[in-house]
Amino acid sequence: MRSDRSGRSDGSDRSPKRLRPAGGYRASASFQTATLIYDATYWFCEKFLDPRSRLVDQMVQAARSGRQNIAEGSRSAAASSQTELRLLTVARASLEELLLDFEDYLRHRHLAQWVPDSPQARAVREVPARFKTDRSDQSDLTDLSDQERWALYARWLEADEPAVRANAIICLIHQANYLLDQQIAVLEQQFIEQGGYSEQLAAARLAFRAKKDRSDPSDPSAQSDPTDRIPPCPQCGKPTVLRTAKSGKNAGHHFWGCSAYPTCKGVAPL
Image (cartoon, rainbow, N blue to C red; front, side, top):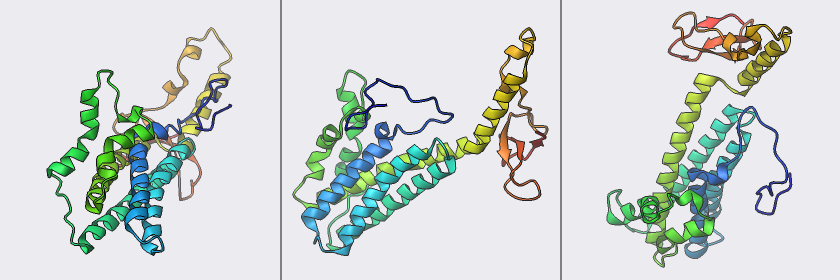
């Protein structure tokens, strides 16, 4: 597939269909907010801190880690849900570290930190909602370029007063952390209900083999979905998902485990 320098496909080729989707992080609100935070932190440190300070390196690297790990986690989603979860958790931890650095900056200089319900904090928080209200085409901030999105926050992120910049970045970090918490919770639930990549790959392989083994095309069962052969949980009746034993004498072997695990620990033979 050919692409331009922005990384976008030119449409002349198609990627093969994947069992699990991956990528797409550039359009996610968490990545776009993390990009704002990284850029704002870089320019904040450049303007208000000694470039030789170790703190500058730590803050810029924490901001960069938040952004880069969201991207890396998204790309790894095709092969490992656990890796995706781990990297999103690293991104969340990096932004939390950066949050503390900005709070320390304000406290050490006896500068006021905006309380969550202050007019200034609400104004920063409400930028996405105000933008959507002002548009008639139902677009939101995720549809904008990085430069267009920055312009909406420029009055705070380019302010001459360091306290204004620091407080605005703190607001953005809280927003990014909230978005990451939501992503992590959804991924955890999906992992519980659907299993990881290896389980899904094994299930797809079994379904393919079952379909291939049906040699009589006149058999009505040959037209059914191979996944219909997935058994229900013998304990609660809910659908099962293919899992892999991690330890014990059956380590490495597949089995059907209840999708309601850990609430239900029902197991069906493969």
